[in-house]
Length: 68
Image (cartoon, rainbow, N blue to C red; front, side, top):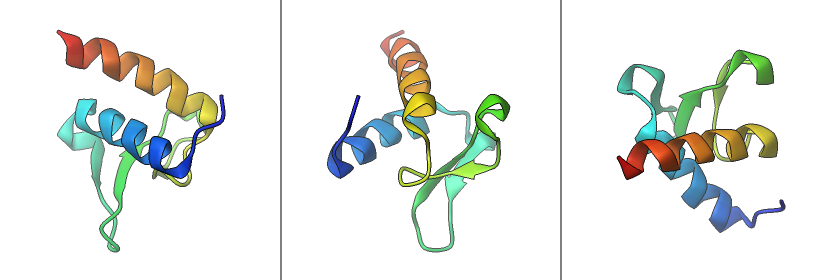
């Protein structure tokens, strides 16, 4: 699934909101970041750097978590 920049930002914000505060934050430039899953390479990821596969997986989990 190809997302526009605006859609990636919106989807990533949902993921960021559903992520525990110990695993999310902001970079020095103010952009939102989360700790990436190890199976996707780990490290800090932003809306611009997260892979489509990881974003899709995390968005599905975030949607379920936020719906509770």
